[in-house]
Length: 149
Image (cartoon, rainbow, N blue to C red; front, side, top):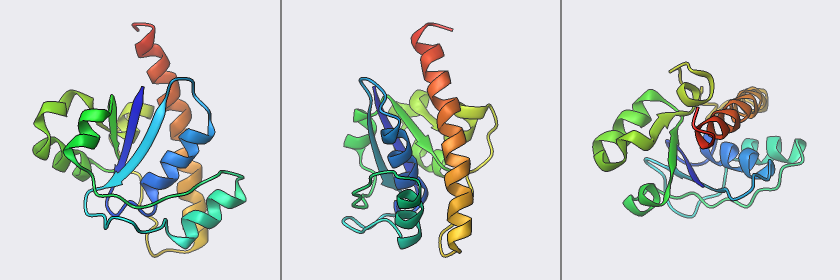
């Protein structure tokens, strides 16, 4: 299974989500992240790196702008906001049935994952906690779909 997380700049939320899910070591699952307006080759923000380090999560991130190849590759595309979802659906209509906001898929709510960009390390810690909880719902819902529920 191929999972793509998408946010704005691919320096905060999506690389954090990618690292968290990768850390959970799911069998037969590959995880990537990208940004709608990302500059290729940048690092995750220092706060993202710090919070991942605090939680013992390995990371080696290079920012990447989402491409058609990424969307073709992905079985699921999880956007961090409803605006990201709308932009992805407009640009990649062939994948509309695979594009969700992370919250709508993981928790049944269509709310956005808040953007900690430019905020304090504590804001990033709260985003990490939110994403970590959402990963548990995401995993449970993927397992249900595999079983045909």
